[in-house]
Length: 420
Image (cartoon, rainbow, N blue to C red; front, side, top):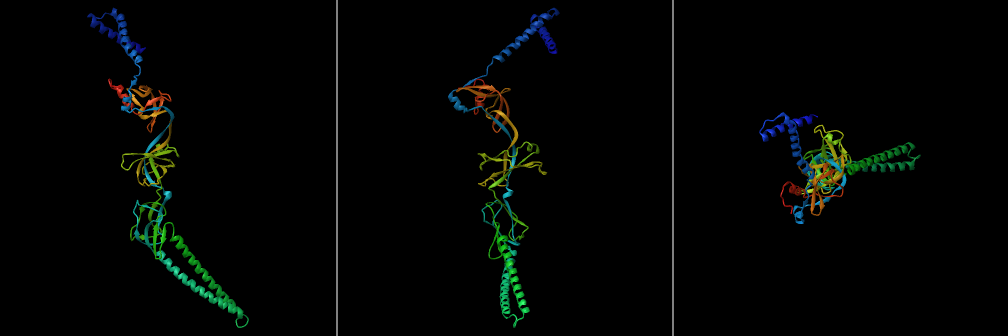
């Protein structure tokens, strides 16, 4: 009602101006009604051409010659149905797989003689990493010599005790009393126990030489020198000692990681972590060594999502384990990753580069004939990884322009452009 009153007032004012301008006479009240109808008619007349044009202007279809299509690089693709999954971008870094990382300790104590590797150096199983003077090994060897000497003496004593006992048995009841015979038997048993003790000591020493001083991480020579060796094919990730440094079994000396598998660790906010799907897809992005060529993303699965944020950064760690047979992924490298979330959308999917804007409309160019392309208004949803979800305006199976759609837009926006 108010709109109608305002329109009437505007019409009256317009009538007054028209009357005064064209008649040269003052506006009279008796002409108010007539002039109102005149103003309303002019308003309707002014609006009519706009309405007619809006209804009668068809979508502009572009016709291009085969040569123009080649020159513009037009590529057409069919509209397909599918599902888009939102992938969360995150900063990531390479970390050694701690389940395949070995920190080496010396079996004995002593002094470092040589350090044969540097951090970041690739090594093979059995490669020498470090040699040291093993005082514990030296003492063990001296103990072995002493024990073997004691064992030899014990065996000699046993042999004498056995011979003495046999003579006592032969002469028992005559020149040797039964008490003397029992005493000689006791001496023989004591000598046998001494032999057993020394043999046990030698067994312990042999075990130390075979298991303690010889292992997947250490070997020893005939002298008192021990050598730390790599237990795996991998990379030396840390060196914590130097020549002439003290060695102790409690002190870590080197760390070697099997880099055949590494962890890709992504850091996300707690809010984003709530959207992630454990077991979901992860794409790790990188470039060629020259930094110019894109390499296909490395695909893996999200294995763990931390339940708490790091107090220092406020970010949640997301871990994925990936194969690294070539060793190109080195611990500490910074990468970009895409993490699958629970946000999805289903419908018609088209390439993102096919979507253009004309004024306030979002359009794609539908191929209606081999040489004809018509802009069609669409409504889009989520865009992900170079794909766009179409909510309305297209049908599955229609063919649209993907590459080259910007050139078609320019032909419409710039009047007079030669489409041939």
